[in-house]
Length: 128
Image 1 (spheres, helix red, strand yellow):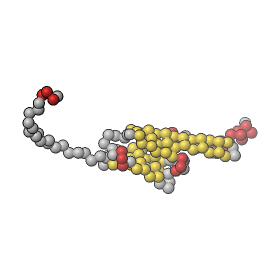
Image 2: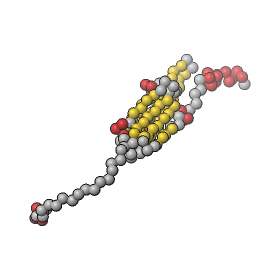
Image 3: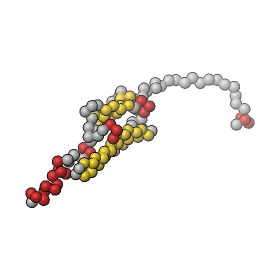
Image 4: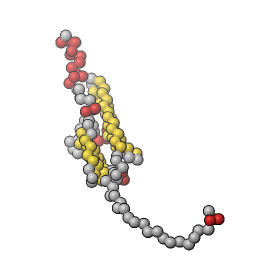
């Protein structure tokens, strides 16, 4: 049996855990919304972040060719940002150890106010 297993040794030694283990740590406070991911398996040029309205897409794609073959890894996360997030201020950063952080401040709530009613002359009904 040992001689048959030797063919699988290069595969076993180059095994990386599946990228589905890339759990997003999401923090939603009164001041900010943030998403944190460990993407240390990916190079910065293998990552993409897109924002379409309130839909935040985070993607990573990697293709590795070695003497023993080829392997590909990818992940995709889609997160809908809450209504009170300032989408114009979304920013991302990537640390040297592969921690991706995406943050956005919350919108400043507009306080309620009283609207005075102006007095106007009567409207001619035939115009409307």
